[in-house]
Length: 255
Image (cartoon, rainbow, N blue to C red; front, side, top):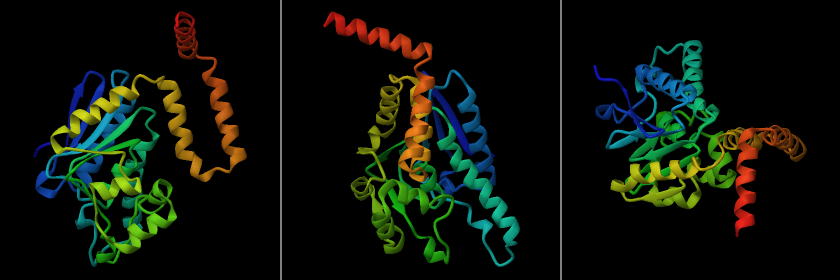
């Protein structure tokens, strides 16, 4: 059996590809475990500075494995398994490195949540977001409703979830689900290019900003500004800040 996640490194950028094209890269238990292992390894490897998630054509991911559903499902066991998948998807937001999605095709269910958990989402012209859980008597899970509201606002989230219309790449861009739409052949080069542009920023500052952005929707202004000030007070003591500040001053003086 082939590995459900393929791993390739490109000068500090790790490309993780969901590799079950025969199942449209649906996330079964083996894929879930392989994805968690791959994300964890990338998170703690100092040689990995950014991560790009994509799927093997023709889909990004068709979501969770439908074999989890059926007449004999035990609710307690189902909730535990669901929490495990939710945790794996949430790991993307907890990694203090840039994580970008290169959405090459259909993203639905848990596959859509995996894409939306990423910091930046670059979509191929072939990308589509499908919200069809209600056709199965279900609702978007694994952050599918809450994350959507945080990204695009309540009104648009209502239209997407309750309206049930599929979103092609351009529609996803218009509502703010994706950062950019590119030609299919340009998807991976453009996403890696975006990753390298992000890597020009301070990694410490990026990590702090990413964590605060994740918290921000749940914070009031006073709590948010307190967290920002605490983060800033730590960053100003770092060698990275002093080095970059000195470089900026020298550039200013030479201008």
